[in-house]
Image 1 (cartoon, helix red, strand yellow):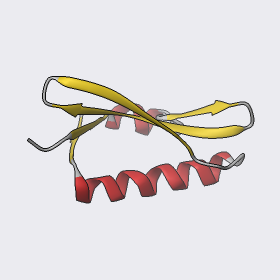
Image 2 (cartoon, one colour; image 1 turned 120 degrees about the horizontal axis):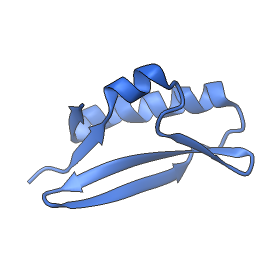
Image 3 (spheres, one colour; image 1 turned 45 degrees about the vertical axis):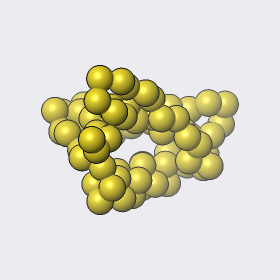
Image 4 (cartoon, one colour; image 1 turned 30 degrees about the horizontal axis):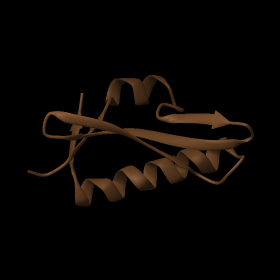
Length: 74
């Protein structure tokens, strides 16, 4: 069974920083991955203090994930 990443499109449209959070001065990203009935949250540093760069990296990660995982937009 292929892992599934669930993304909330409505939240991303209304909140440009959806899936992003700041820990100290560095921006991080979090995504929820479903593997059958089990879910886990992926958290990783975007290694930038600039929110615009963080959004760009997050968007690139999501585009790359579209090639590897089943993405569900809800």
